[in-house]
Length: 368
Image (cartoon, rainbow, N blue to C red):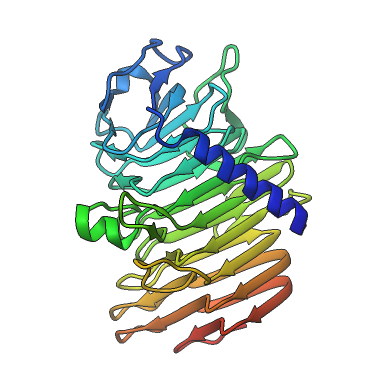
């Protein structure tokens, strides 16, 4: 498992280095609308570039990438509840710009089975939830499938998305490098990888790396993923199967092998809000390493769930089939700064190692 993690993360770093600094492109593939090369740096993605079925607006891109200073704005009628986008061209998506939505309340599903990388300038400006995935298909309702690769005579479902499906043995990775840093927020007003209060942020793919990155002349900056008072799902898989929404969380029992996840260099994921939200983590091996956080990081690597007001927190639910390692001052913190209770932290791991001043902090709720 250690060897597999090393080579996977080496591949992610190499891939990231090869695309950063290269002008990104957005093109449609012609399967759900006209085939066009969109004009940047402020890309406009209107509803007539895709197809709508009920409350679902489907888009199919050949390429989707944003360089620093670029933006992609999705527009459409108020009847749209879900914007479902696939990238079918066979290249990873490098996002170092802004994804914006002018469709009030719409949730976003963003599928690229070739991989996704987010740079230090990556940012979201949406009013709903956002789900990033390298899945091969999205199950809609009970049995309808929307594949990431176009198929003949495909039928677009009016049902809501219910699961992310993977067909191959090595799902592509998702990586974040300095996305949503405090430096970017303080100096440039960037939202980072953040959804509004009470909404959901999901990252569902192969190996997941959440690490520091270089921001202009600022040096190393951390990544911050935020779903204040809402729900965050971080799911890493390494075999065919379906990650299924359920009322109690996520069902990943169909996977024979789970993937690797790492949070490092001052980076963290948080559901802190008026009432802290829910955080679900599913992986085969999960490492939080607080070493070398960088000069602009406020904390070592960690998971935050702080209730700020009178509402009670939700819960952290962490399931790791093999090793979970918390090291070098990294931490899990569940507490409250108001009248509400902090979250319950539940960890189910094959092996749990806490070392080098790492810790788990809880206030007002038990750790089980």
